[in-house]
Image 1 (cartoon, rainbow, N blue to C red):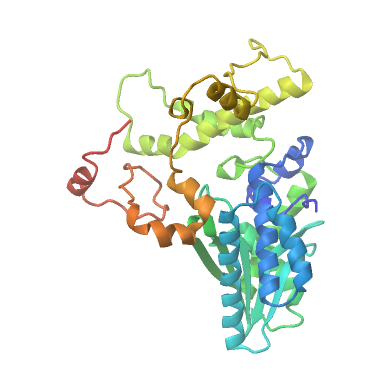
Image 2 (image 1 turned 135 degrees about the vertical axis):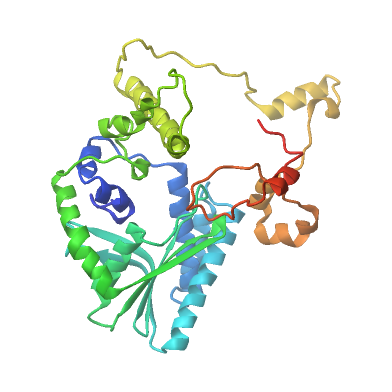
Amino acid sequence: MSHALLSPSSAERWLNCPPSARFEEQFPERSSQYADQGSLAHKLGELLIRDKLKLIKKHQFNIAFEAITKNDLYDNEMLENAENYSVFVIEQFNAARARNKDAQIFLEQKLDLTAFIEQGFGTGDTVIIADGVLDITDLKYGKGIPVYAENNRQMMLYGLGALLEFEHLFDIRTVRMTIYQPRLDSVSSWEISAKELKEWAENELKPRAALAFAGAGLFSAGKHCQFCRAKGICKANADHNLELAKYDFAIPGILKDEEVSDILDRKKEFINWLGDVEEHALREAIDNAKKWPGYKLVEGRSNRKYTNEELVSKKLLENGFKEDKIFTRKILGITAMEKEIGKTALQAHLASLMIKPPGKPTLVPLNDKRVEMNSVEAAKADFANVEID
């Protein structure tokens, strides 16, 4: 199903930068292996929940499950994570039924947002309603960074859509949003009153959505630009990143503490932006034969590779070369092993044979959830044997 122009998944972006929604329409949507993998995990999670709730016949389940397992993106790690997600949702539903025997659950619920967003719609992974509380849970399969529920605009839109859908059937006073991110062992929940959510929708969402749908308003760059299709060519994004140029390192003197912090805060965004510009330039050169001043498109370096490894080994063995000379044998690393045999099996059989050395000291923003290292002496002792690049 195609996404709405002002989709909940991109709400953080178009709420902060209203004209971005129309601006990026000129660039084609491109799927990725990560997005496709996430979609498959969602299908599997929903299927397992339906099976546990007896909402699907066994032969239908078997057909759907087999189709998922034959997908190249499927693996044991996905099955384990989807199973854990399904158990989490069932536990949520059981808790709701304990509060109210008439609790209801809705899976992959279509949500109409047109009351506040022109042509707006979305899909909620799981909606549970009981005893005045609407619970909406979203599965995030990514493992790059944790995503938190507090003031999460995507989740607020899902919660709003579910509230509008069911408030005439249930007395909903509280909307609770949960993001379940199994590959990072992260579960984040946040709640808001139904009244506050509607006030936010009326006072903030509705006017910003009107601007975004019209392609009006001011461009505003920031962390919300991460998944914008126009980020590599956007002037506002370029200006935002090039603000680092205000620190003229050629002038003698010492940066103030606040200036160092500002640079650290912008480092990742700046590096990512450089990559975005390079990706845009390369794609234009390849797809549209674009000529960039001072640059040309050439064939990159490549390494030799065998056309058929099985025939290579057969030929070498036939000519007297020993196996230990032409083969290497190495056990899988922990991440690859976990993906191959599953997290449960890894813990059951190898927990006593694994260690987690201390990580290299890293500066992160104050809103990072990790505990601060308070003792300089302790840190020096812990990391005395850590090689710093």
